[in-house]
Image (cartoon, rainbow, N blue to C red):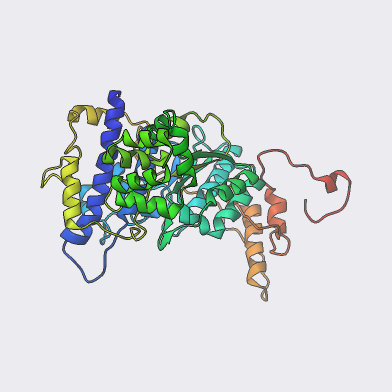
Length: 470
């Protein structure tokens, strides 16, 4: 194992601890108010390795990320380690003025790219952000290389219809530089999701022009599959019901052993492979899904050199690394005080050092700091930008009749902007869904034109057929 790998694993354990402690502190230690606090330790843990792979290995400063709402504690923990989040904000998590339960550009002090409180909305925003980036590049306004617009998606968010509208819109406009990373833990608020949805997701994304990469088996699993009995183990995993997999994960190594030995009766190779692992090692093997293998995910993502949209289906266990892992009721479940104490002990963190950046890490602090300070994503510091106001020499004068509909008045206002304030007009994009004429945007579009990344022929004009659309 290289030193960098050791450091990355230490950071992954640290963000799991900080995110869990943040929620525990808010619910059990901080002065209680009259309103329930709550939190999502299991949902956050589910995506811990994914966020670590991205923020500590894959992302560049120009990339933008919409973080799954319930993964905000891990996001805030990472920003805290990078120096972009304060201790006070973490201690006030889910409190007035503290770090937000769902990433917020207006309320959080750390480097939030997209507000993702509304389920599914942040996902769709990344597609439209990529299209906006193309618009900026097409007008010569983009400074620096194009970034990747990345959504970290809870699999239950894929129930939201707006996501599929965004997929279709992206297909219409040749979407590029967009990644959606699905936390496929197969559990939602009320239980385990429908079996076999991954194949349907794949078909939908492929139909819309996306590459789909399925990350299912971690490196421990892949190594086991190469041993005698490994092919049988892989077939068992592939055929295992989502609910059973979750239940066995929660029950632990002894339960895995009993079930596998019962199902592999008469298969000496498979039984020997199971017997090679003690209960702890067997539980680690069976929960070693690729979505918890940060090094594997980083290697896969860093190998992508094209700009086509990519959907990563990352298999995970909800609550991975916590005693809540796999339980169907763990969505809003919070560890007990004894469970958090056990986790603290396992992490080697002393009482009073819960918020310390490197407590429990056996690597010298100087090495940890050097690694974080050399982080490529954080290289340019805070990434909130402002643009100068566009000067308007004279007020534009829309020609609105005394009796006019609001729709007609809207069209006249935009037409006046196009005529009298062309620099402002360049910064306004209308997205009427093929009803520009009936929404009174005809004069506006005739003046400003349509935007596309490539030249679009006007067959009616070429054929000398009169049209109100110029």
